[in-house]
Image (cartoon, rainbow, N blue to C red; front, side, top):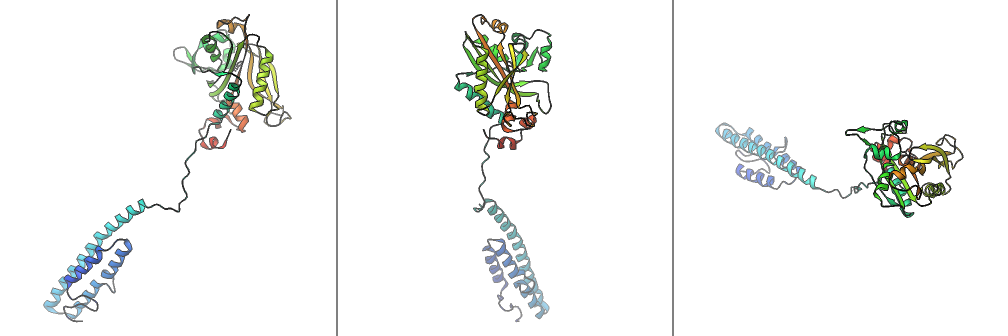
Length: 349
Ligand code: PHE
């Protein structure tokens, strides 16, 4: 190797070398290209800077000093420029990959909402009754003693009030324990019968176990007209449960007591799981209790300004949560109120 010159393939002047390196680095567009340039210049064995350093061995004295300084300067320049460029190339690749679209990825399905079991059942019941000419009524969930109890013929301090496990709140108000106060509000609001309403809504009782939740849902039904009889009540119930459950569902009325109906009945349907044959769900009885009903007590009619000598009526109240549990085979009422999307996504009306 000639003194002051480069080895094989190495340019004679270091300023040309520097310019060559700068051009190569300038052209770098990726990490791989950057690595190629680094190896070509700083590679331990065949790097160009290395080769220049090796030529030092053949020099002596002042010439070696001068050449040594130049080679070292080139080395520092190459190292510093590579380091700067590496950071720039990394940043470039990071932003490119964040923008990149992988067209082979499967699409993301949009989450589709589903109705809550109680909403499904509510809608079905509303449809069944509106098709029979009923209208939908609503009332407040915060009620007063008069609408929730007094006007419904619960005597003051009567033990019947205890059966309702009432949540009392400030100002003598309470959370309605049933949808029956909507009967009162409707009769007071309407000019005169005929009245044919259903009222779905939330109700509250201080009760909490596997079968009871402190908030639950009812649908109230009220019919008031001339000549309404218990036969109308039973016929309506049959038509209703045969649409809601199976077309062969049987209905049974058992004597019961509610202060606002006389006579009163607990209503059972033939178990939808075994059609009345007896199974675990109906405790082998073949029947399931689903609602309370009766003929509107004449005192309640009179209290709302409706003459019981002219008009009569029937009413019933149905627990919607229980119906949803039966319809969708949900074993525990709490599942309805846990807000677990898996429950909501599973059931379809
Ligand atoms: N309100 C009663 C209850 O919640 C049910 C009912 C409604 C009974 C209408 C008779 C008539 O238990």
